[in-house]
Image (tube, rainbow, N blue to C red):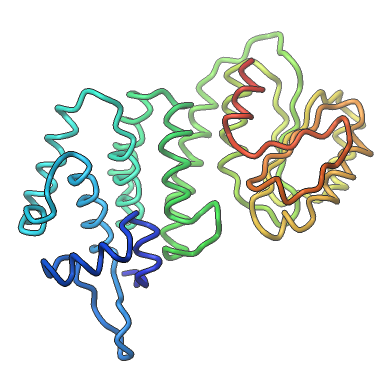
Length: 293
């Protein structure tokens, strides 16, 4: 079972530290354990309770009532709200995906993922639920707010789903342009690249998918054998971002006739490369717009 500081607990659940302390003092609710040095320590079960609490608060319940509700009753109320709710409810899916990861619950993950894709469609579900879940649990930003095993459980389940969704598309005989997809050396966060692959395949582009941690020199052979219209790479980890200028120089030198796209959060840290073939994207919406236009 994971142990979390109040900072980590607040970041994952979205409940401020001030509110957590207030609930603890006023209602003895979400009362943390204490370390030998009197530091608050929270566990997985408390995160689940906090996520469910947030959901009830957003749907009109008062904390004074929630603090007295049993876990079984709380889950029942949440299910009833979801069934009767008409408007789009991304928070429900984000919370349930996080809970499935904390519990290593494949059945619950598959159920909530499939329901969400059916309700929203994969593109909207990915942008509004999957990315929010990953951001909250710390996979994309390497903040280590949950144990590595839980991070890997969630990321691998999402990757499997994206791969299956991509393989379901029937390929047409004539493709549109060719896209070369890869992650540079020291980059292993493959979910965004797999989502891009799904988008491209579903829009009838030809995709050459090379995966993660790819040495740049190995790309030269692809360019010699095939006409590559576009390249796409993600740079998420600090290790790969530190060498992103080298990636820009390599693509500019070796893929001059291609449109080259680099997706990285905080692209503002990169000085304008002033290279006509390099396109820097900071968010998934920009990528979706390019692929689906």
